[in-house]
Image 1 (cartoon, rainbow, N blue to C red):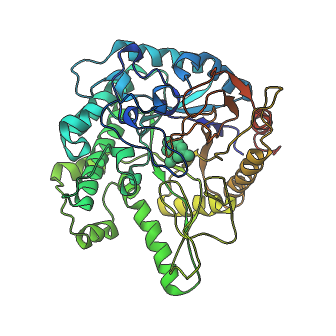
Image 2: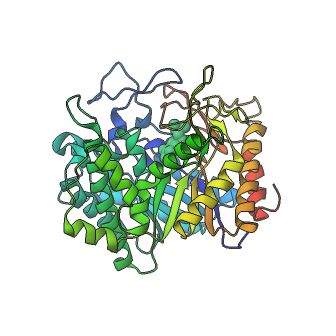
Length: 468
Ligand code: BG6
């Protein structure tokens, strides 16, 4: 691998920081999501209610442990750390006139700590944690006003941290809006609304906001590199029947209709046709079109957890579980405890697919295995299953780079220090190299323990991927 390859880990503020009211932080959309489980969806309760536990209120206490956590990352040899800035620490209500200095100071300290160890921050501006007030007061991204609020927030942090951060990501997975509109866009769709109309208009506003911020980041410092971030795993046809092949290819296009705009600066003909077919009429101004054109991204980042299978469902076949969305079960693959199918080769195919389409450097900013780890009496976790998962994915990643010529900036393993699951709200769905002593209800010491995978990843980084 290239000697500048960015090995590291990834988290999101709402899933790790906790301290949901400290330093004058405002409520985010995640602060009103209860915990769930494999079989129970998380509830969105509008306001905080005593009978529920809200796991994001505590996260993994990164807010209090950031020094220790960054030291652990440094011990593993991290070259980079993907994190997000909680919008509600900086603008507690989203539409405040002035930023909140306490919140800004917190990230000053985080960036200083990262700098101490030469760890490059990769910063997502909005990772499923927008201010709740913007949802209540303006109907969230339904409103064009949100473009300005996001722009102001971004301007504040891009300026404040301009000496610390070179890599920015505007939004996490806008394209998840199709499946879980609340996560990326804080949308709760009313029964009498045209779901597609609401979702795509909101996505359009986010795309305009994203493009404006890409341009702003380049104006602030031409050395800034700004990326989009997309939820993606390649779709396979169920069989070689042309109808199945077509379905799989259309699914790929459906996933990428949103990032297409961020990369090319305009909507694809396919995407516009889909809007027409769905009776969606977007309010797109000439100014919007200009903004989109002038705010194309420098790199394409994505999360990869699984491939998907599309096609005619036969009797006896099942649908797989997955990250927000999934296709049919793939009989050739095994699954994790949450039913997510494990497909390392799919990562190589995905890298090739995205690079052939976009011709921009790629960045794997999420990949990993959620598992119920067991902390042993000697204070460690023997997670050979995680090592096996990561080893196989990294092997395929290296083949994509060395054998297929895909330009790849880096790899950040998701949830490097155990954190709250976005989908289920559980703590026991653990991804980390570091175990955090906290259960699904917030009980525990929050003490950190190195897992076997911690020492394994350290060697991977040290050898730049030679020793797996
Ligand atoms: C990604 C999200 O799509 O999936 C993360 O960006 C999330 O926020 C990750 O945590 C894994 O999903 P889950 O539901 O296992 O937390």
